[in-house]
Length: 346
Ligand SMILES: *Cc1c(COP(=O)(O)O)cnc(C)c1O
Image (cartoon, rainbow, N blue to C red; front, side):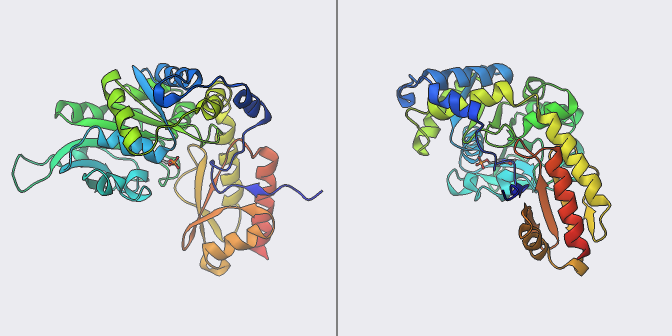
C-alpha cells in the first residue's frame, strides 16, 4: 500500500471523521431560512453559550462571517482600523470595500500583534473631508503572523480604549479556539471584549463547512438580514451544522496535540541546513519557514517535497507555510521532517 500523502498545507484539508459523518447522517433538519432547523438552532445556541454571547448565526464561511460582522457596525464612508497582515484586509477581496463601502486603515503589527500605542491618535476628527472611524478589528490567532496570539492584556487594553472612544470592536476568531487552548484563557473571556466575534468550524475543528458570528441579540438579528442578502441563507443546513456541533464537542480538547506537533515540526526544521523557522517557536498550529537560495525558490522546494508525498504551501518567494491539524499525527510529523531533511540535502 502506498504511504498516505502528508498534507500540511492548511488545517482546512481535514476530512470529516466517520463519527462526524454519523452525526451528520442522523441530524434532524428543517428549513433554516424559515427558522426551523433544530440542529442549526442547537449549534447557534451552543456557540453563543461557549463564547458568552446572547446569540449566534451560522454562516457558510469565515469570509462571510467577517463581511457581515464588519458591515453591521459600519455605514458607507466609515473606516475600520485593522492589522496590516490580517485576513480581512488581505484575503477577502476587500469585501468590506467592494460590497459595503467601508474604508480600511491598516496598521503593521509585529508578527500580526498590535499594541494600543499604535492605535491611539488614529481616530479621525469630525470633518467633512474625512471618513468616520468606526470599528477596530483584531485577529486571534493571527494567520499570516504565524498563528501568533494577540496577548490578552493587549486585547483588553485595545478594546477598552475603542469602546471608550465610541468605536465598535470585531474579532476574526477563525482560530480563537487555538488561542484559548494555548493560553488556558477561555474563549468566552477573550470574546467578552468584542461586540462581534467570528469563529470557524472548518479549520482546526475539522468540520467540512461553516462559521458563526456571535454578538448581542440585536446585532445578530441584523446579521441574519445581511446573511440573506449576501446569499447565505441555507435550507436544511442542519446536515452540516451537525458536523460543527460534533466538532465543538470532540475536537476542541485535542488542539493541544496540534500545537505540540507544530513545535516538534519546528524543532526538526530548525536542525535542517538551508531551512530557517520564522519568528519564535510556533505558538499554536501554524508555522512559516524560510528556504535559503541554495535550495531554490520556496515553490521549487514545495514541488520537490510534493514528489515525495509531503504537501506544504509556498506563500512567498522564499517562504513555506506548514500547518498541523486533526489529520496529521506525531508519526506524520517525524516522516515530514525526514522528507524535508532528505530533500534539503539532496
Ligand atoms: C480561513 C480564515 C478566514 C476565512 O474563512 P473561510 O471559511 O475560508 O472563508 C478568516 N480569517 C482567518 C484568520 C482565516 O484563517
